Image 1: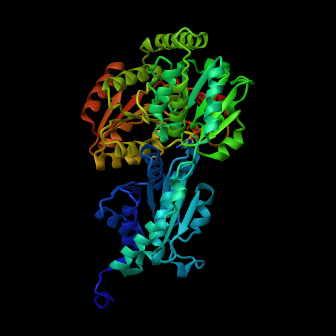
Image 2: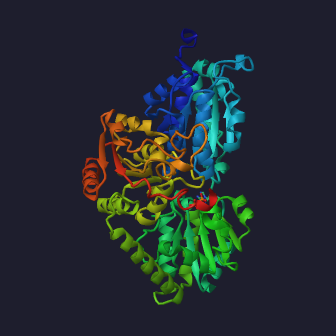
Image 3: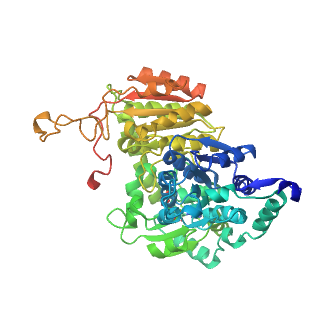
Amino acid sequence: DQERSGSPEVDGNTLVAMSLARAGVDRMFGVVGIPVTSLANRAVALGVRFIAFHNEQSAGYAASAYGYLTGRPGVLLTVSGPGCVHGLAGLSNAAANAWPMVLISGSSDQSFIGRGDFQELDQIAAVKPFSKFSAKATDISRIPASVFSVIDWAVAGRPGGTYLDLPSDVLHQTVSESEAERLIIQAENGRNKELIEKPRINYSEIQKAVELLRKAQRPLIVFGKGAAYARAENGLRKLVESTGIPFLPTPMGKGLLSDTHELAATAARSLAIGKCDVALVVGARLNWLMHFGEPPKWSKDVKFILVDVCKEEIDLRKPSLGIVGDAKDVVEKLHKEIKDDPFCLGKTHPWVEAIKNKVKENVAKMEVQLAKEVVPFNFLTPMKIIRDAILGVGSPAPILVSEGANTMDVGRSVLVQTEPRTRLDAGTWGTMGVGLGYCIAAAVASPDRLVVAVEGDSGFGFSAMEVETLARYQLPVVVIVFNNGGVYGGDRRNPDEITGPYKKDPAPTSFVPGAAYHVLIEAFGGKGYLAGTPDELKSALAESFSARKPTVINVTIDPYAGAESGRLQHKN
Ligand code: ADP
């Protein structure tokens, strides 16, 4: 064939790689195997960096976070059947967090479907609850258009997960090189441009929002990871500083404006949400994390102005005013509208003063706790040492990855975020096990930043084997494990109260006490530290932050220090 047409042949694997590269994909995460190994190799040959993991679950978490950090879909490549199923962890996490991600899985040969082929599964059905859009390339000619559509759909409107199914027979079909090029150009020209256009903002709603803010006695600006994703930080800063309105970030909104900003209400959260009369909420859902926007946490009379790219979100919450639009565009328009007729609460405004005083009081209380050096470590003592070490790095600030019940809760109030998109945590779904995947995504997305994970031993254990991935790619990641011997803590049961035939088994919440997690990474040439005292921790942090090499610091925490379910005890 090749001789007859005079043009070399391109197979399905190569055509997928070519299409991805043309769509701007330059990083991929995944686990190779039948039938996608050549696809990964071809992609690498075309300049795509392929980060190979041990488990698709971690690789999927990485892809989801990469989408959030870069604004371009993170791509996860998996094998068929079980590989695709493991990948659902990442896809569902992307859906829950509204992050753009594409899952690409190989699948069975179409001619054997229904007869028990190798790793056979109806993958289109399996991904359905977690994907906004899916495409199956049933023939090689459909590959380029399918690739472009899954990429475009992932970022369209509210970002989320999409899926591309690549049957193994299609990966082995061939076309001539010139036909491949023609198919790619045709698909590029056929892209639906409207899909990725930002919504047009209704000017009268901007005016109404400004009126509401202007008349408010106790206004508050709340922003979340949707605003971070939209890169709304400059507009938000101008809006906050020109109006003097206090602001409250959600956990991953932290850093859009520095936690140390004089209008930050983070340390006065209960007062801010309990007493505000108008809340401008930008790129954050009024879900469980925000107490559904309802009493008793919020005042029953609060007027919400919701800014969201997703109209359904606004319809669901029924705010006083909804503005459908991109967060960056909307806040800039709000600022511009205010500039024409400015207003500013000023430093002596009673609301601003009340918030500032409460912040001062709570920060002082916390500092008293942090000043005590408790050994064996509680959660606060090592967290303060880590806070100071991270602040000592300066700019560009490290990306912080945080998970675990107590470790994440304590970390959220103690650790300081000074730059946008420098915090990744368990997120909307409270997903534990994301840590290593997020670390790898952060290091790949922002090579100039140090990445620091502060996580519980349980969160770490979900994907601890990925420390080998850190070592293999020599990523500048320092993983700090708060080791208290189990989920929430060690085995704290009274032996006399345990009954039943398995009473000698360890508690469902406990792990091997004193587990040497730091030794794990040394098996792969990384650096491990064990730290049980302030001095040991300080020196481990100083060395590893300056070395910027794959590191695990195993911090020994008192097994009795953590609370069950962390801050969410009422839910367990
Ligand atoms: P958080 O966890 O920080 O509270 P959520 O994930 O609950 O944030 O909410 C983020 C919201 O931001 C989602 O409702 C999503 O639709 C919205 N969003 C995503 N991208 C944008 C954007 N570019 N502009 C405005 N809103 C966005």
